[in-house]
Amino acid sequence: MERRPLIAGNWKMNLSLRDAISLAKDIVTGILDIEDRDVLIAPPFPFLYPINKAIEGSKLFLGAQNMHWEEGGAFTGEVSGLMIRDVGCTHVIIGHSERRIIFKETDEMIAKKVKKAIDLGLYPILCVGERLEEREDGKTFEVVKNQLEGGLSLIDEIPDTFIIAYEPVWAIGTGHTATPSQAQEVHSFIRKWIEERYGKEKASFIRILYGGSVKPENIKELMAEEDIDGALVGGASLKVDSFLKIVRF
Ligand code: 13P
Image (tube, rainbow, N blue to C red):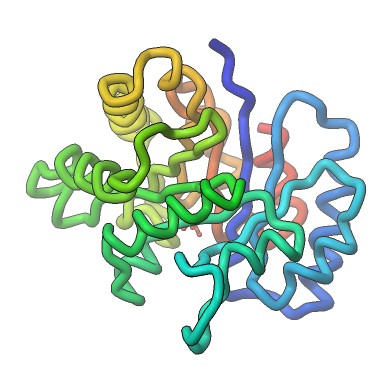
């Protein structure tokens, strides 16, 4: 089964409103002739609404970088899935390693977010990935399996639109991309895990993205791997030239 590639830009906590809108518009123009793949941006929360207006009618997808698991209430500083859906998001990144490590998100919290996102009709991008010391200890598969089991513990069926991103922590923002075979090994492990749990057909639909120092120079060889269906790009998604080169791998 041919899975449609998805290139997603995670802008993290970067850019001014003006630069964010202009980058989004430049991406819209840059992908006008592209038909065979999906492109998504995940700007910071305050920019979602104006960017949704700026890209209206285009085929660029809009995602948020996080959401809370409740629809509303006394959760100072948090943003709900209802709110991000309201401002035009179709996708939401959940369980990014920066959320797990810096903001102490647990698999239980991530599982509640995944469930709420699906209930609200949002497409989750669930991030998993091991730290350097875990890889060195030979625990990569164990860590990834635990994160998958934890993050999906509250749902019985995953929708075909569910997206998983494998982002080895040691490759994020370091310039040390996983080699295509290192990434493929884990992607294939993830697909087998989905197959065992949800069946072969489901496993053939689910897109698994690679993230961690993706650049125009390494995207082609990563995408050549059988189980790598796209990329979640950080730093290189902040400049239109490098992002579009990645999109056009
Ligand atoms: P970099 O591409 O900057 O390494 O970031 C990857 C990432 O964390 C995307 O979510």
